[in-house]
Length: 95
Length: 153
Image (cartoon, rainbow over all chains, first blue to last red):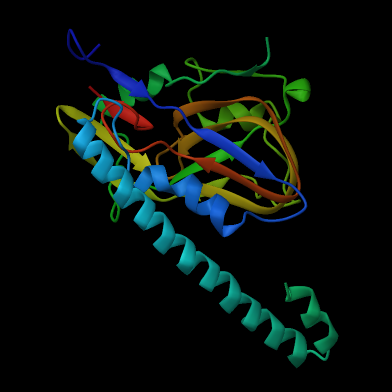
C-alpha cells in the first residue's frame, strides 16, 4: 500500500471476438464509447441525464463516420480489384 | 495450476519506484500485449509472481506466429498518465487482432523498451476466447480513478 487508503491497482479489460467477419461500425463504436464518455454511477441525476444525451449524440456522429470509412474503403478495394482485372469481384462489396 | 490470473505483478510495483517504466506518449517506452495459448495447453502459471514477457516465451505458452498473430504481441498506444482527483491513472487505446484464427485465455502487458521485457499486467480473459477468420479486440476501461487499467491511489 502506498498509503492507508491507496495502492497500485489494476482495472478490468474486456475481450470481444467475432468470427467469420470483422467488427461492424456499430460494434466498434459501442466498444469505444465508454472510453470517450464515462458516466459515473454516482453522478448527479441531472448531470447524468445531460451526459447520456451527449453520449447518444456522440454515438451517432461516430457511427456516421465509421460507416463512411467502410464505404470509402470499399471504393478503394473495388478500384484495386478493377486494376488487377477482377471487376466482377467488386459485387462482393455491395450490400 | 497452469493458467492466467488477472494481477499486477509485484515486480512491476517495485519497478514503478525504480523509474523503469515511462508511459508518456510521445517520448515514453513501447508497451505490448502478448497473448497466451488456450487454457488446456498452457504449461505455466501467470499472475502476481510473473515478472516478464520472457516467462511466457520460456514456457512456449505464447500463441505461435501466423493466423493473425505476430509473436511479441500488439504494440499498445499509451495515453500519458494523468491524475483523476488524487489517483494517478494510466490508459491504453483498445487493440485489435484482425483476420485472426486462434484461441487465447490471457495475456501479458509488458515494456518492450526496458531491459528484460518487464511485465506490467497479467490479464485473464475469463476463459478461452476463440476467434475464427475474424477480429479479436481487447477493450481497456475508461481512464478514471475507479476503473483505469493501471492506477495508483
